[in-house]
Image (cartoon, rainbow, N blue to C red; front, side):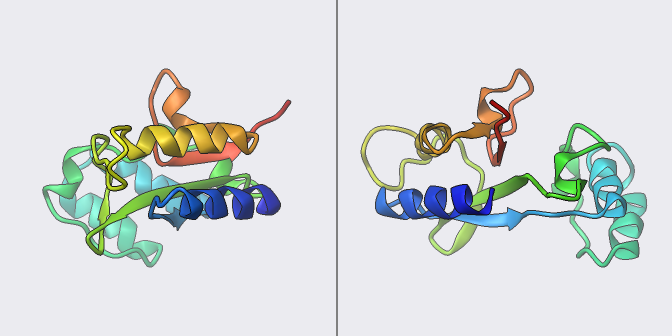
Length: 139
């Protein structure tokens, strides 16, 4: 997995795409805290985040879930998943329409194409989309 991720990230850079890792391995407690986001009141979410050393979030950030499961591949021993964000003007962006390299193809679509080419499974191909997520593809 590490070798594929290194190749994947090098290809993103070669394509002029500024994607950065946001998460690799998580504890089950961190996964559970993330699961509360968008499902529980802000005070409960921030208490869960604080309990695992995560920074508090705002009410606006608590409007949408960031994970769809409490059982995540991020928590397994081998940690076969990585999440990303796009860096746009020095800030994290998850805007699916951004075309920062001006090639008339949304950058997240290019991200997925490159991930597939590296033998990774892209969350953007799933029924419940998870565009920032790539994982080891069992073949």
